[in-house]
Amino acid sequence: MSGRRRKYAGAPRGQRGAALIILFLAVTVLSVLFVSLVARSVNEHRAVQRQRDAAQALYLAEAGIDQVKKDLFDLFQAYYTAQGQTTAAFSWFDDLPADPNGKYPARPVNAALPGTGGTVTVQITAVDTATSVPKDVTVAATAQVNDTVKRITAVLRYNMAPSKVFDYCYFINNYGWFWGGGITAQGDSRSNGDFNFSGNPKVNGDVYGSINPEIGATGAITGNSKNDTLTYYRGHADPQARPTNPAADPQDIDGDGILETFAYEGGYGGNSQRFPAQQLLDMPYLGDLTYYKNLAGSYNGTIRQNGAPLITNVHNGSIVLIGTDAAPLEISGPVVVSGDVLIKGKVTGQGTIYSGRNTHILGNLEYVNPPEWVKPDTDPAATDAVNNSRDFLGLASKGNVIIGDYTRNDWKTNVVPYIKPNFTRPYSVDPTDTSIGYVQYMSNGTPFFNGDYAAFDGGTKADGTPRRYYESSYADAYVTTVAVSATQINRIDAVTYTNHLFAGKVANFTLNGTIVARDDATVYTGSIEMNYDMRARYRGGMDFFLPRGLALPHVQYVKKE
Image (cartoon, rainbow, N blue to C red; front, top):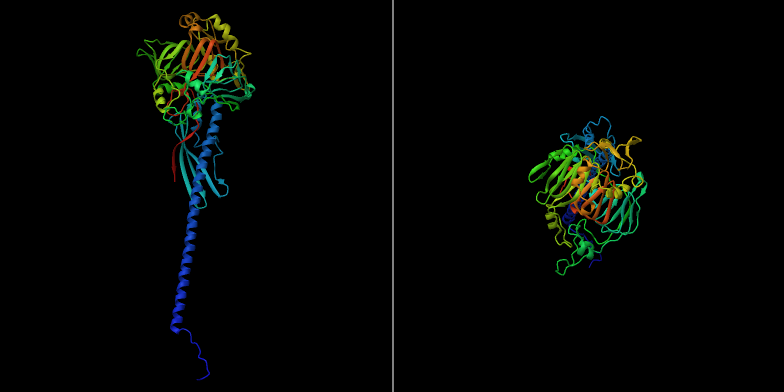
């Protein structure tokens, strides 16, 4: 054999060409896949970016709407206060779209959102001038983030609502005081100043004091008070006293072996906490009563007796209202009396009486069908449904709420010392109080009353004799015939409000409702029990036409593009 080695020729030429084609195709497919993935990734990134821009633009537009809503409220609130809290102040909104006076120059215009480069512009496009209250303000926000634009059109409603002062069984727009162990408050109590206890009264609720520079108050709560346990309260509180809150004391209420923990909003939880140095709570000051007169007309408010009308919407002058078992006073909706209201006896229906001066409660004032709260309650919703149809009376006074026969010497001896300086102090009042004598002097352009309710107010009674702030416009001889002595006044069913003084002389006395006033001078010879009427706490459903303050604005309508 030959010694030469055979050379390896490798794969055939055709096979080598096929491999190159397969490699090329694989590279091409991978390249296409890579390009496709890159393109998809870029598109997804862009889509995510657009979604993010859209979300940020939408949030930015919403933020612009919220900013305008808040700013308008703050500006209007200051104006409303400066105008004496009259609803006529709502005309402030009417020229906002044109804004010729530069009322609101600070609305967001090309405001930037940090970190996004986005901007927002908000314009006030319309105000509904068809009604004086509420006011609906239409605003349009346009926001842009990169190339994405979002628009929101919203209608903001500025309105009145029953004031938060009615969340308390006792609210005093001054120094609060419970002096005496015979006092029981079945509900939260609050003052727009310091709160002082003496004699260890009972408070089955929380206590609030407020910082008030006008009267030099730090919001301190001093002195001793006590409160009931849940067990004792459930067994001893009146049916008209507020319910308990099972969530504060879980237990087997219905005997099924399960501890119930549901809550009753505003119910008593078995303790009494103190909250000093709180912010002031605005009083819904009754200035010009035009708003309430319009309200009375809108709801056709009436008071009837045996079906006969005593008041239809508005009564000019003063009036005496006396309900009996056979012929109770029948109230429906809000009514306004321009002068004094003298009232006692039985009442049925639901509504509020506004007096342009004083309300005098000259005897027991009782519901025919009073509300009741069982304790504990396994079905609060059902109880609410029943109680919301029971009798409710609001008594709101531009002047004072006075209890008892103020013509008697024992009333004057016991009450008058607490309704004049140095027990009371001067305070600012509304210009519309001029007609009832409360504007006594000016300080830095603000009208003031010196706090002496025992002084003459510049008016006269029906017999021509001078009239004091705490007295009615009726002659004393007539008041004596319709009023009862202090020992005969033991129950008032009403939610009471006054710009100024709540005062009177009582014996063993129960108030089922509230006391809301500037000054309190209630003198008792036995005991006082205040049972908070839960229905005075405005929850949006029931409206008993109590005095209103500014409501927080809310969005009535919104459209997003």
